[in-house]
Length: 352
View 1 (cartoon, rainbow, N blue to C red):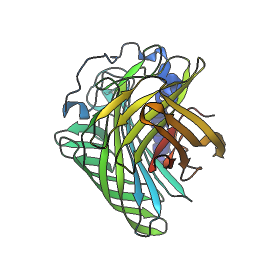
View 2: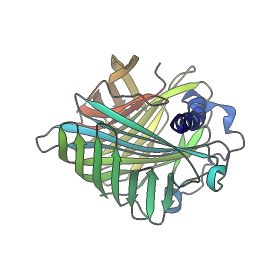
View 3: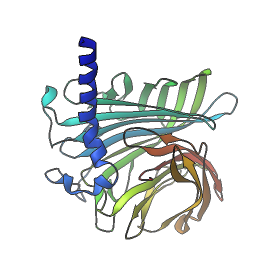
């Protein structure tokens, strides 16, 4: 009886934790549920290491790392590590009075397999959180930890069929996205605070059902927080983080809405100099669609950016890289070919 009661309570807690996340979903990020929360303002400087930590007066926030890795035999892999914070109300409190909800997603992807896992936790009781001195982000036994400036990190996560233990070293500067970290997401002016560390060199071990693999590669960390980053008519996004063989990088996104698409991003030169893109400068055209876990998604794209003479094709390493989590999406490594070559990551949300 006690076992059944415990299972029932755990199920109830899981439902209560997941419900607001599902309610916000992707279209929900443009809802009026942001009332009472803080909103980003243009011209407010980001301050480090303070802004590596949480911002509980904002409704949503994430610490989002993706990496393109290679095994000793040249086999390509990708991994994802994400910690989401979602608030039921602004502010923080101790224990179960905390209005903060935490969710973790982790994945490991190859050309033939895609493994993912999810964690849920309530804030205030120590099972999940972020601190800055020194930096540590965690949920259960998943950890991203390092120095105050995010220059050197260790990264661990595990699921039923995968695990990884990685070491990251930044070889370039942090990049402030948009207007010095103020990233506009719609013609109506919705925005987030957004910065990245796109210059990580990575080494470590990836463990798959076939056994451990020594891997090396490059990683990209995104940090973003807001309260209503989408307009009411926007239902999802296509987000690209691309690292080219010549050292340049591109962050670009397409937000889909009934009034048309909104695209923007940042061009990052090989020396780390960042140039924000004007809305509409980046053109993202789906070329091929596939069905992944019952969802039809574009897995090959043409991206063009006239200002930087860019004309490339983006192709998914594994078209089936669907994250079947409580609110689901597609996320996986991609290859870049055309007048520039490289690797990167693609995230697509809001596809039914």
